[in-house]
Amino acid sequence: MPKPRVTIVGLGLIGGSIGLALKRAKGEELEVIGHDKDYLKARKARKKGAVDKIHWNLISACEGSDIIVIATPVMAIKETMKVIAPYLKSGCLVTDTASIKGKVMEWAEEMLPDTVSFVGGDPIVVVEEEKGAGLEAARADLFDGVLYCLIPAPFAAPEAVNIATNLVHLLGATPYFLDAAEHDGLIAGVDHLPFVLATALLGITTQATSWREMRLLAGSAYESATRFASSDPTTYRDACLTNSNNIIRWIDACVEGLKGFKEAIAAEDAERLEEVFTEAMAARERWLRGRKERRWEEAVSMPQAPSFLRQMFGLGRWERGEGR
Image (cartoon, rainbow, N blue to C red; front, side, top):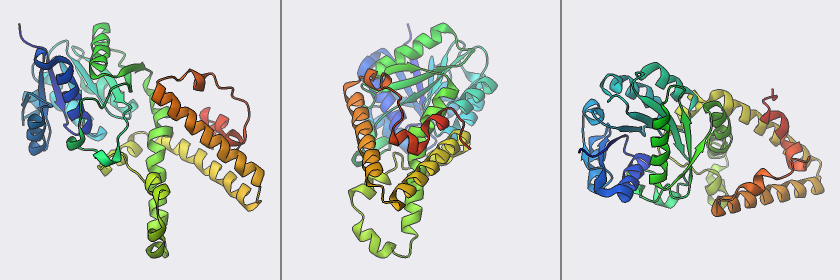
C-alpha cells in the first residue's frame, strides 16, 4: 500500500517547519514532497530533512498527492492554484498558510475543481527575531501549542475538514475554526496594523533631519517597535493589497487614538495619561499570560465597561465598523 503523500509548495520558515513537524510526527509513514521556485532553497530543505524528495516542476510535485500545502506569499497562491488545478488527485485536500483568507477562499472556489476540497489555514506562530525568518530558522516545534486557524471552503467535504484538523494536530498545534471575513478583520488589527505602524515609525524617524543624532539614542523600545516578522517585503505588500478595507479601518482607529493621546499630552492631563498607560500595560500582561498558559477564559469574560483606554481609541465604534 503506498504511503500518504503530502506536497509542500514554498519552503520558507512555515513550509520548512511543516515538513519537519510532519517528519517528526510520522517519520517514514508518509512521503513529503517539496517544491520551491528557488531550487537551491528546495535542495537545502531536503538536506535539512524537511522533505523526502523535491521536484523542480510544480505539476510533478503535486500530481498524485493526497494533501497540497501552499506556503507561498499570498499573491502567488492564485497562480499556483491555476497551474496545479487540472492535475490534482481526485479527493485530495488543498490548504494554504496565508495570513489573509478572503481572497484566498475566492481563488480556491474559482480555480480548483469540484473533485478536490480546500480548507484555508493560518498558523499563528511566534517568530523569534534572533532565529531569523527563513528556511534556516525552520524547526519541527514551531507550531507546538499555537492556534492554527482553519477556514473550510463551502465545497469542502467533511472528511477533508477532518483531514485538515488531523494535520494541524500532527503539527502540534490547536485547530481554531472561524470564517474568512472574521479572520481577516481580526488579523488586520493584531498582525497587519503592527507592520504598518512599524513602517510609518521608521519612515518618520529615519527620514528626519535629526536622524543622524537620533539613531545614536535608539534603544530597545525603538528596536521592538520596528521589528518585522518576515524578511520578505512582498509579504507586507500583499497583505495591504488583499486585506485593504480591514487594515484601513484599523489605521483609522489608530489615528483617532493618537489624537486622544495628543489632547491628553497637550492638556498635561497626568491622571488620564497614567490611567491609559496602566490599563494598556495590564492588558498586555493579561494577553501574554493567557498565551503562555493557553488560557483565554479570563480575557473572554472581562467586563466591557468604559475605560480611559477604550474611550481614547473609540474601540466600540471601530469594532462594529462604525468608524469614518
